[in-house]
Image 1 (spheres, rainbow, N blue to C red):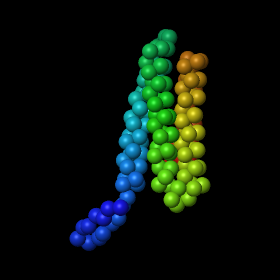
Image 2 (tube, rainbow, N blue to C red):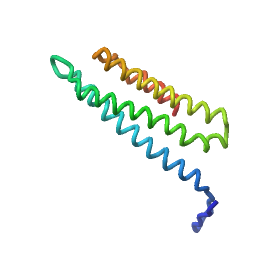
Image 3 (cartoon, rainbow, N blue to C red):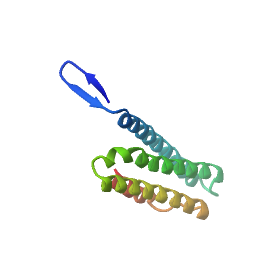
Image 4 (cartoon, rainbow, N blue to C red):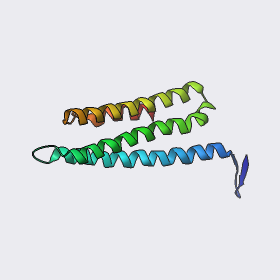
Length: 133
């Protein structure tokens, strides 16, 4: 444990919590960027008239799958930190992050298989994201 001293306060922190916070932050940024980029590619694949462009659609779904993996990684990164306060909370958070990932991958697979966009699929994903935090 290290101690940080400032003129008005003294704070303690442990390296494991700091490492978990940095990892979770990096994964959060990765998940956000990959979801937005994937969503844009998927939407653009369906906005063109005529046949759906397979290349950008597959890349968009792949980016969203990477987002799903990063989301589950956030749950794993924070597992030890949250379990200090409540094991049930930590396990529940991890479970919801994993369910969010499963929903993203399942919807992406559906979009690839049917070549049709699921109406308001973002709302289904945001439901899991909002529940997980």
